[in-house]
Image 1 (tube, rainbow, N blue to C red):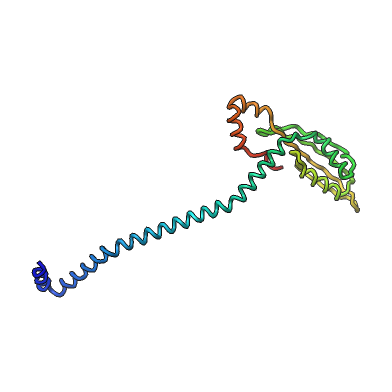
Image 2 (cartoon, rainbow, N blue to C red):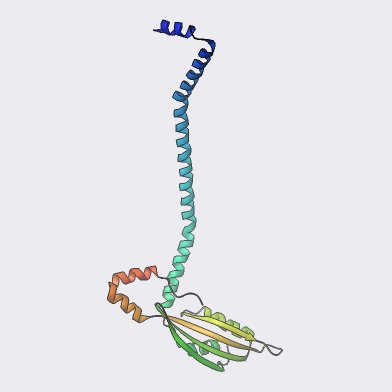
Length: 207
């Protein structure tokens, strides 16, 4: 058989021999090179997948601090909204007394609003000829209160020299709407209501 092959090759022309050698090279490349290429390609794909997994794990690890902070803020907000907001006029007067300020010269209640699961109460107050520093300390105390109370607006006027300023304040308070919570309990039961609470925001939008 080998002798017949050798004779057949010797009978080929020079061009046919070159073509035969080229086909042999292509055959060797296909037999040995293709598996190596497929193997290296698979390894490269695995490396890319590993890099992607490592990057995702790194992002998750970096987000743990942010998630923990958001969860702490949500828990703090829920605890704050469990506190019943005091009457706003009395609350504002107590904050003035704490900073040795005279009580507001005018206080007016604003219409109560219902915003989803919350009720919103508000007052407008006028304070004339007050010390800027003391009023700013009072405003800071309002914002840091343990009650769900916040400042809606602050307008400052200064018509004369010295430390006498005129202020117009808007103070708001939020509290949970009990009627909506009772509706949740009647329709879905205690377990479902707790589940929905976990998905809600801890409170209304920041004023």
